[in-house]
Image (tube, rainbow, N blue to C red):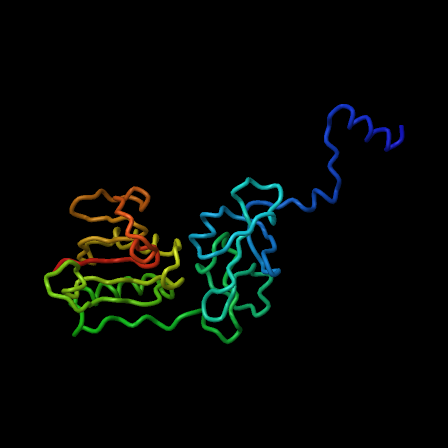
Length: 246
């Protein structure tokens, strides 16, 4: 029997004919794709892409579920962009700055140190020693993950915030202001687990709060949900808030 007869018979029986060219075009979840402008991307869920500061486009991840789209992030670290490690010609990559699997990283210029200058520790004159010591411990536990630290605000003490008394830290994640990301969760959970040595009053991350005085120890997913304050900064999606006991 000729090949053409076999194919024709398969069609009559309702069996789909899949050509080799079609097979090579199928994508996989967490696999590579090409975004707009030819930028390297990764096929992931749109929510995961957005939370990591990326942009999703449709039609670039064929054969995957509807919510899996090609995610690109063209700016990360100091002058870098997100791409697969095999595509980073400088050989200088930084983890934790790009959405997707572990080998989709921030590709940096060869001379770059990865990102951001070491965070400034709040001076004792502006913050209580408890907040200074707490910030130092957290930064030491997460080197390179905290971009900036805020502490004292100009307001009456006691006031509406522990910042008024220099008893709180805002720990900005490496993605920067206004960028919803996943970087703060491990930091926030570490703070919960080290509550005793930090003299912790409460910690906030990702529109959720945990207090040792009223909450059971557990993952961030089970923390108390806070009200929606309108943007990623007010909802603590770009920084971890830590309040300390005086």
